[in-house]
Image (tube, rainbow, N blue to C red; front, side, top):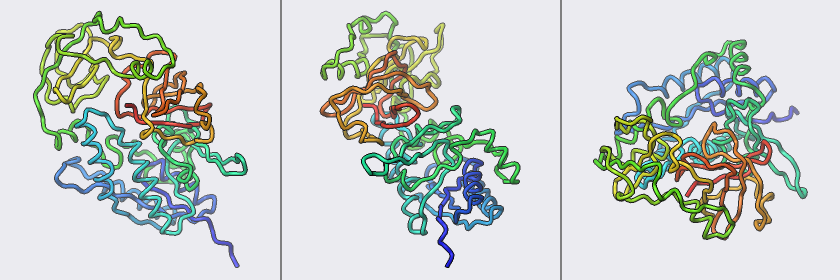
Length: 398
């Protein structure tokens, strides 16, 4: 009697990365099934005049035919609306800046989609992410390590920072050992229709829409003041020595608490909830030598505070805080002794070069203290940290 092949359900997006992932698995003899996720059909919000998901699903189907693997489409739009889109609008309304791509992976691809794949008899799911999983043993227990992709320019471990041990145990990343150039070469050699297709831009799974355009269809414009804070504001001359008392670290982790009297009026905006810390475009205020950058948004008073130039002191701080509710440790076993501090490499946004930092646990959360001040630490975004090339923890910045 023939042994049952290991079944892998591949999330085919219609792009070159997932296409090559499917090819590599089929070549290795796995029982591969291609599935395309349709995540959007809300006609009340115009995503694009084009229908990118139709084109993408067609390309995914053509790739499946080329590889002689079964293919189907699943409609996850109800879950996507509730778990991603509604959450995004709620967060922006509060003045936070969520990351839809990280949420999409945690809530849709590695949760809803994974459950569907398991019902289809999958032993594993696979995606076209540039990262790697290594299985090891610790105290006779399987431990799954999330490692950066070998292509440093394409490494996507940041976007997978919220995955659990259970999710990692059921996942494969077939292109994690390859560069983008190698992936495109394989696609060309195999005659895959996606070989020269450009990487997708825009919201995760939605398409080519720009985020500001998307937000303005649900969040109402609301005229408010833009207030410019001088470089030499006395707010920046307070002592900020790092000591590890909770009160001091919590104080250092908070953005500057600006008031109208701290600066002067330079223009108007259409709604503080449309802007985020560090943003330069869209302010439409001229007459300055250097561009203006958003230092803080006050959605309650509908005021945007800005500073001139990307070296403005209001953009920088050393310390951020993540509450226990928003903390996720992929490797809890490493952080069992929370009385210790941990030297790590960390980043606060995708593609940011890794920075030297210290993780310190408090009763209600975690402090991440950087050796050098970081620009535009933004509430609602994800901070992640690594030991070597392994992503071990992450959380939502408070």
